[in-house]
Image (cartoon, rainbow, N blue to C red; front, side, top):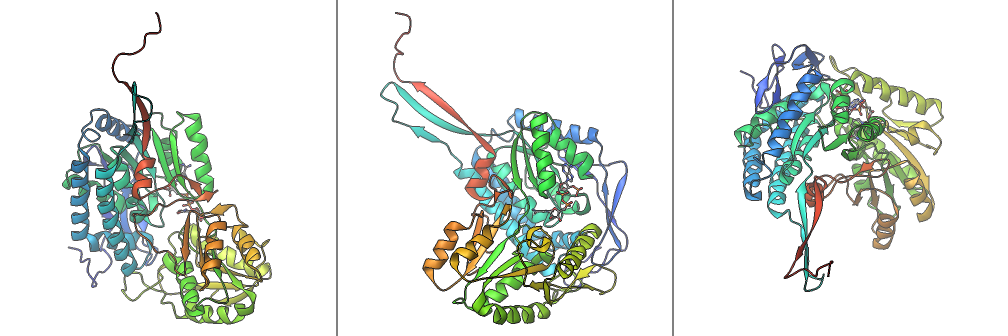
Length: 498
Ligand code: NDP
């Protein structure tokens, strides 16, 4: 019996999972072995599903949608399922967090906090299920009444990444289900366990069979087949901009399925000389180190007013040096392991590029040998110029680039000098400057004197090449609907043929 509390240890043998389709577990053929990135030992075995398995799951989701076992329920009943799911998650919080840690490498304290956020997502989703409504037009003249109905899009395909396997799932599933849609999820092959567990949790909470299905396997086979599937009405994808682009092509080449995309970011944090520099430095250190910087909203570019740049960077470097990097199962750990070998190599190659391109290394800059896993010290480069690759590319690791500015216009120009527009923040005690920058920086999420704050009531999504559409809150549930204009004649219709 595994212990999921603070005494948690590694499993003696990897746990084997089936895949979840049409309300029950199914055995797959070949298995994928996942090794814990923090410890280097095998922890889970998940099925390498076939395209036939995917087709069966899509067919189950289609049946569950068309016979109205879910969409036909009152919103209050869908809300009941979502609220009971929140209760079960509360009960199984430490267990879900445990598998997140073992497959992803994130620290256990952070993982538990993420499950709390997931519980809130289900509660907000329950509210959304009850509040979702259309509109009416009482302005079309006495002879006509107009209604705008919001209807579920249908069968949704959901492709999620490895950086926040359960959190990103839960920022979407409650809202997809609140709308009345059914869903087939394809998690990243390296972090499938908790997405699979949600199947049995939703079932226990009363979700009808076929409403939530999970098909595991690689992106290139199962992900690609899901994005091309002619019987999927909408695809929600979170991941890299390059795969997001391939999803757009797949949607166009198959059935013009509706798309929601949350892609990369190269997020600025603007620090004015009049800010509380200690606060701003703490925000910057957190913004780049949280989840080892493997976060679409990581603040990877700090843009600091030149008059305080040196002072600010010294405070920031001192804070970064104090971050506790280490075994993700230890509750004191703040930064855990890098999730995949490929990502580890990518991050280290960008650190080498930063050095080679002439940026000044102020903190970190190396892999850490902590035994068993792959760890990288939170890293700060100063004197970064806009042409450098560390200034432009999404590194997706704990590597922060510092730029300097003299005027508000220059700060805004640097912040917007990216193809991305996911998130941004500004730090100042001057309300005018805060509002000017908030209005002019092009990003879907914005923070003033804080960072990565918020809850599932607020919409998530990006400008520019960071994506299409919004997730979470009422905006999120509406993404999974389409509107139908209904025109009702009042009284006798005037005849066309006299
Ligand atoms: P991907 O975009 O490849 O992976 C995201 C999801 O898409 C995973 O479930 C993956 O499955 C799946 N996938 C992969 N190929 C296809 C395909 N052809 N069709 C459909 N689905 C597919 O990201 P990576 O894991 O390769 O990470 C690369 C970079 O992407 C990172 O360095 C980072 O810059 C960015 N990224 C951004 C994220 C964000 O939150 N915005 C999240 C993750 C990555 P599988 O993993 O099983 O192959």
